[in-house]
Every structure is written in structure tokens, then in C-alpha cells.
Length: 521
Ligand SMILES: [Zn+2]
Image (cartoon, rainbow, N blue to C red; front, side, top):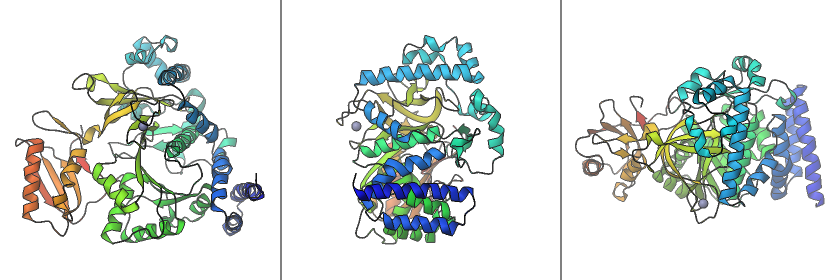
């Protein structure tokens, strides 16, 4: 180890302790910031500081929040990739038996479900054996979220319900506390939000799996990254936490919801200053920023990130094209949910690989139009967590297949990830139209500079309404062209109409949705 690295290691250790001791003893923020800025100067060599963050600072700070074992989980995740598909399947089965036993012994809610289905955890000898259990519906989780928590943590659940912390906001020093239960919530963009509980370990695993995904693109833990998120970010003026996060985690947080023009300019300025190698966060936030940058002729000058990872929503073709054009880097997608964690990620070859070592993904066969066709996805978490999810209907459509990807990874593939169940349109003659087809309609080169944004509304009557923000070249001929192509796509029996608007507002969850359904599924 070189002296500079030893030096950084020592100083970063002092900073971690000083900052957390500072917040515990209410030391004035300016002192904590002063120390942190000194470290920033000390660690002038960007690469060695980033290595230090990935190796040491980030895992240590997170372990204080009870997000323990990030690095070991990352190492194990990398090992899994060296196995054969059969070995991965055997490992998955072993974990499935463990988690079924954990749920059966510690969660009466699951014990009852297993007993009703006549299944004992020790009777699980293959993935197929789990199929006797009925899928776990979203509504059941909404009604029974307290009962789904393991015995040991259930006494703390009410306390975390009363907590003033935002959803998923960690408990400081959670590692040293008995009550580590954090209340979290799904975004609710697919219906009503689901409340669930965690103790930090799922977040630790998500970080580790996020690192594995980055490693596929040659990116090491600890590199500078900017995240656009639902959490309170720099734009809200809460400077202390984002500032420390920037220093200690190499991570800059920007607000990813309901951005104003000033916020967008602020984001561009921050990106330009921080020069991150990785951009990640809510799909619609990055798409919104990219659209804004094109419209206002803004671009990144003198540098480019290496990778952009979108998540929390599907990444449609037209969005991907826009993002790689504006940010001039590789674009990938992370598919998951807040409740279950990371499920599948797209590799450099463009295929979605399932994190088979941490989640079991099945397709509910009763929802497939034909055997082997895409159906509704069910997920089972394979780690012993505070609140296990077994055969949870996540609300998306897809198909699982063995890996045949040229990248050579043994992890199975999520084929034809069609998106949210509610985003699929059924024509009057029963065909299913995946939302990607709407993108293709608008990606027509003849529509260049004609449409600034669009949204598809599935109306109560079964018709489709397109909400369109017109661009400079839009005229009647463009509308005629769209109508003609639409007829070819959905047939003449399905009604279509156009609604021209000045802007399209985000959903209450803060996300900009491409598809809106007026009636629930
Ligand atoms: Zn691959």
C-alpha cells in the first residue's frame, strides 16, 4: 500500500468517526464540514480516494445504518457468475428452502398459507414444488403488512409507523440499536402504495448487486456517481447530509421529482462541477433532464459519464435513444421494486439477467395467453429478511428463460419484459400491445421536431387518447400520418383521439408516466 493510500485510509477513518460522533453530540455542522473539506483536499488523487470509498468508507458508514456486509455480498455475487447454470440453480434451491423455513417458523402469516396449501418447507425439492402456494397479491400485503414481519421484529413495527422519518430513511446508529425496523413504501405509480418493513440488510444487498451490475461495464465500487432520486436532495437546501454523502460516498444526490426550470439548470451545473462517471436513478428524471438539455441547447462540456443506469420504471426505446444522445455514454436499466429489491439488470449485450442468487422469478402460468408466452411475474426473496415476500405478484409481465446470452453469464434471462400489467393495451379483438410500440410510433424520423412529449391514456370506454405537446414542425399532415399508423396497429374498431396540451404533468408519485390508465386493471 502506498503512503498516499495509507494516509487517505487513516484520514477517512477519522472523518467517519468525527462526523458520526459530531451528529451524536450535536457538534456544530460547520466544524464537521470543515473537517470533511480538509479530507477532500487531502485526498487530492481522485482515483485513490474513490478506491478508498469503495473499499472502506462506504461500507463502514453503511454498516452504522445496519447495512452490513456489502463487500462480502459483492464478492459472493461475483463468485456466483463463475458457476455453471446448474450450480446456480442448486444454490437457488438451497436458499429457497432456507427462506421457506425462515418464513414458516417465524411468520404466522406464512405458516398459515403453507399449511393451507399442504406444503412443508422440507418438502421443497425443486422450484416447481413452490407452485402449490397461491400467489401473494398486492392487496394482501396492504392488508397484512404487520403480520408479514418476523416474530422478533413485530414488537417494533408500530413504533416505526409513528416515526417521523420519511419512507426508507435509515435509523442513525441502527447497528447498535435493538429497534432497527424501518418503514418503507413503494412509489404507488402502479396503484396504491405498499407499506413494508426492513432493517437495512436488503439495502446492503441492493448496493452489492448494484456494484455487480456496474462491474459488467468495467466500473469499480466507489467511483463518483450522481443519483436522481425521490429522496430529499440538494435542491431542497438540506445541505449537511447531501454534502457528507458526496464526500464519504462519492455520491451526489439530485432531486428527481417535479423539477422546475431552475432545478434543471441547477442539476446541469452540479453535474458539470462534480463530473461523475456514473449517472443513475429514476428513468423519468433522467429523461426529463435530457429533454430539457436538448430543448435549451445545453450539453456536458469537456467530459462525459461512462454509464447511465435508469430504474424505477421501464426504459423505452425512444428514451434510451435520447439518453445516449444527450449524455454520450452507455445506457442500461435496473429492473426491480422497492419491496423485493433488485430483480434483473441489463448486461452490455442488452439482455436482462435475473439476480438468481437473491430472487426467484417465476411466471404465473394461469396468466399466459398460450403456454410459453409472457405472463405475470412472481418474485420470492431468497434472503432471510424482516419481511419475506413469497410468490409476490409484482405487477409486471415477462417471460423467464435460460441464459443464452453471448456475455456468458449463468444467470437466467427475463425475456420480453413487457412492462407493467396496467401499461399493456388490449385491443377490441383481444391483442396485447406493449407500451414500447407507442414509442416506435413516435420515433418515426418523419416526426422529427414535431412532438416534444406524449402520453397515452387508456380511456374507460376502451379507446386511446394521445396527449401531445407539439413541437415546431407539427401540423395536420403529421396527425394524419399518426392516425393511419395507429389504425394499422390497433385496428379500426378501437377509438383514438388526440389532445394537444402545453405540458404533461407528473403523476402524484412524482414520476412522468408514458401510459395512464383511467380505470384500474
Ligand atoms: Zn448477458
